[in-house]
Structures are given as C-alpha cells and as structure tokens.
Amino acid sequence: MSAPASIWAAQYRSATVGFFGLAFMVAYSSAAITTAMPRAANELHGLPLYGLAFGVTMATSVVSMTLAALWIDRAGPQKPLLTGVAIYVAGLALAAAAPTMEWLVAARAVQGLGTGLDGVALYVAIARVFPAHLRPKMFGALAAAWLLPSIVGPALSGVITDHFGWRWVFATVPLLAAAAAAVIYRGTQGTGMNQGTVPPGGLDPGSRPVRSAEGARPPKLWRAPAWAVAASVSVLALGDASARTQGWWPVELGAAVVLLCVAVGKLLPRGTWRMVRGLPSLVLMRGLMGTAFTIADVYLPLYMIDQRGLPAWLAGLSLTVGGVTWALGAWLAARGMAPARQSLRLGAAFMLAGMAVSALVLVPGWPVWIAWAGWASAGLGIGMAYPTQSVLVLQDSAPHEQGANSSALQLSETLTTAAALAVVGAVFAALLGLGGAGYVMAFGAGILLAAGALLVSRRAA
Image 1 (cartoon, rainbow, N blue to C red):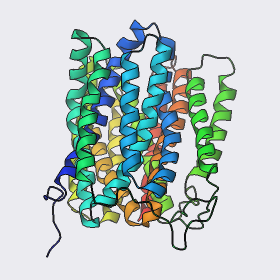
Image 2 (image 1 turned 180 degrees about the vertical axis):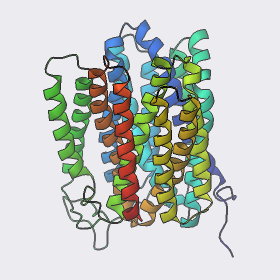
Image 3 (image 1 turned 90 degrees about the horizontal axis):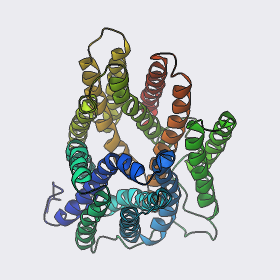
Image 4 (image 1 turned 30 degrees about the vertical axis):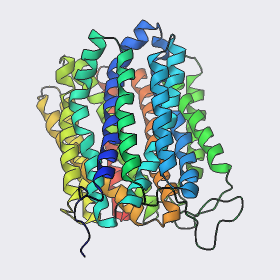
C-alpha cells in the first residue's frame, strides 16, 4: 500500500488543521498585538516601557526554547506544545486585564514563555506525525498560515481597537488558540507525541542528548537553562542600551553583546561560528537570514514615511508584498521544485538581490516602487529557504536530537536578531541628525548579513 501523498489525507487531516490553526493564531496575534500596543501604552501611560513590552517576549522565549528541548527529549512534544498554548493564553488574559503598563509588560513576558515552548515543540511534533516526504508540505502550509494575518491582521486589529478597545485584541486571540489546541490533541493521538527519546546506550546522569554536530558536547542538565537565562538578560540589556536613555549606554551595549556572544556559543552546536558543514551551518544560516530580513523589514517602512512622506498604509505595502511572495516561496519549496541544496542557495541569492534592489530607494530620485519590487524578491527567497532549513534539521537529526536541534535553529534567529536590532538601533539613533545616513547604515548591515547567509548556504546542505 502506497504512503499518503498529501498532508490532507484522512489520517493526517486533523493534525494538519491543528498545526495550521496554531500557526495562524500566532501570526494573527503578532500582527494584531503590534497594532494595538501603541493605544495600550498611551492609555496606561507607559510609553517609556513600550520597547520593553516587545523585548521581554523575546527574552523569555529564549529560556523556554532551551527548556523545551530538554522536556521534549524526555517526554515527547505534545505536553510542551499544549502547555505552551496554555501559558500563551494565560499571558493574553493577563494582558487584557492589565491595570498598569508594568502589568502589561509582565503579561508579555508570560506570552514569551508560551511562544518559546510552542516554537520548538511544533517542529518536533511535525516530525512525529508526518513521514519525511510530507514534512516540506507541512512547513509550506505553516508559511501560508502567516499570509492572511499579515494582510488583514493589522486592519482588523485596528478596527477592534478603535471600536471596542485594545483589551479586546488580547481577549479574542485565546479563542483561536483553544480551538487549535483541541484539534491538535485530537489529531495527534497514537503518533508517539508523548514518548520521550534517548540516545543509543541510554542517557548518562546529569547530561542531555548529544547534538548531531561535529564534536558536539553533552553539557550538564542545568547548564543550558543557565546560559539561556544569561542570554535572556543580555537581550533585555541590549534593548535598554539601544534606547540610549542612560549616559553609560555604550558600556551597557558592549557588555551585553559580549555576554550574549558567550551565551550563544554555549547554546548553539559546536562549530556554528566556524561554518562547519551540515547542522552548524544550517543554524548559522537561519540566524543570518532572519536577522537581515528583519532589519530591512523594520527600517524600510520607516524610511518611506520619514524620508519619502508616504502615508502609513502605503509605506507598509512592502510588508504585504513580502508576505505574499514569502508564501509563494514556501509553496515552491514544499513541492520540491528544486533540490534542498538548491532551494537554500537560490533562497539566499533571491533575498540578497532583493535587499540590494530595495536599497536603491535610498538614492534620491529613484521611484518608491523599486523598494517593493526588491522586497518581492527578498520575500520569495526567505520563503524558499526557511522551510527547507527546518526540513533538513529534522531530517539530519536522530529522534533524540530533534528537540535540541530545533531549539538551536530558533535560538540562532532570536538571539542574532535581538543583538543586531539593538546595535543597529543605537547607531541609527546616533545618526539621526545626518539625514539619511542612518538608513544607509541599517540597509548596509542587512545586506552584509544577507551576503553572509549566501556564503554559509554553500555549507548548509
């Protein structure tokens, strides 16, 4: 009997709907909360804490990503996944009831814990439920789940915020989360979702499973969470330093970058910074691509408003264009239009070319549409590469390594993005009085990172 060729086959349908629904919920909540946060900060008189309300979710997710890897390797992905949803919903409920901005920041920290658990557990859950030939299609479906929210999420959230209040944005998302969790629970029964894994020969006391990286080391159980906490503190310090509110912010920025670099070296597979072929390079490529794309994604709309005088809705058109082509790239990758190695290289090349073309909008006299054309290419490229990276990490990992390696993939992006945004933000603020120099610097940093991703792609598969 031939294996099912579709993620929508009867035996996979419920799991597919659940995973898709969970990704849709995360995508919608991200777009909606970003839109509602300015109103919340104003109403709660908490504008000084506005940046922290975003940075704290990234910081706490670093800790829960690391804990998720340990939990999944020992108990399977279902409990961490459903627990992550429950924690995220609790954070949303706390945010909806927040009487002060400090309370809202704490609620956002709780949301970050849930996001970190879910991000890692979802990858491993896909590996447990779907055979290898269907995983690319499932990751392509997850990318598609982000498309509609990226287009309509901000507008819908704006309507809810304007007519009912920002609290209702936080209060409505749990309905989507609860529905997705229920379908996931029902659709993944009997798939090994509650079975832990141990490496051949068992698990030595006081150690965690060995990663499938050259020369990987088996650290003590407490070391990974401890380094994750150090990385989390570094992320928060970076956010504080980038605001440049203290006279000693350069010292804080430098110390945070150093601590973060040390922590990252302990959390990621050995050989990541040396571009060791295979998993280490895959992990490094994810961090470089995600960070490059995010930097340009943050500063391109700002440039359109600040320097070109476009209205906010038109300046944000690049985000919509990039979201559409991202989904298209993921669709192409999911259907195996090119071998995995070629998808990685083409994806990195399309992203680099697109960012370079988009940067031409910085040249006086060039039309604004050049940025949107470039961003279409960048979105296509990252859409091709992202799901391919995820598939290869799971493919190259033994069952007992899937939690740790999925965690490393996401930690690489989270920590690299946090560090780069803080440094670029601080330099950008220092260059504000020099016309468009800050934007040139920001795009230059993004293009350099994208070029690095293209270089690393040759060793990633």
